[in-house]
Length: 178
Image (cartoon, rainbow, N blue to C red; front, side, top):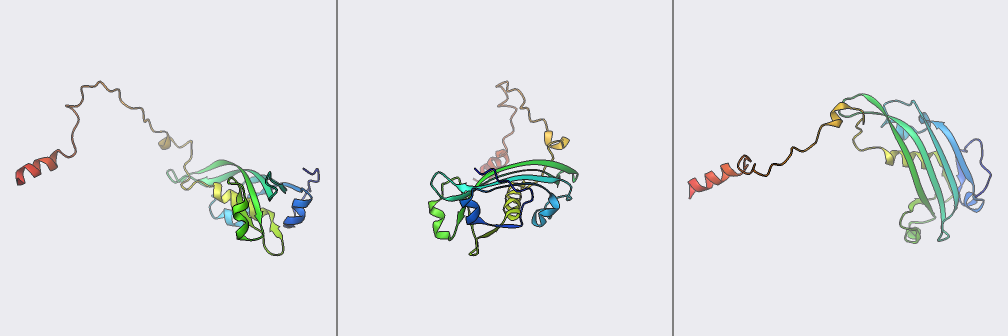
């Protein structure tokens, strides 16, 4: 791993040169730098800290170890209140020149097709992973409705007689028609 960590993350880098040089890029950027992610957020307040380590994996394939942390402002779909969802992403990305190379990647590696010019937009890589980390239905963990009491009632074993059979009415209709 290289000790060469740029202070400012460039908009794009030559992926193959970054792999050869074992480049590391890290930054702390505001959430408003991720335009595609903003559509899913309550607002743009917050920051994302990330680190991208270019190199080769154990199989010799070009790869990026991506780590990102952010606190994403979301709208709870139950209470419609804003809440902050902490997100931590750790992902291994395998760099491909063509889709045919995908089978050569390790199973835990996500493929990234590098454009013909070899240039990768670093913030786009981070943004993609943050979008994938979003919950399908955002629910605040502090919402009192999500903390419902689901403790089962004690079973005394003799409640078979008390239990209502939802199909009893159907059985009664079947007997009448026969």
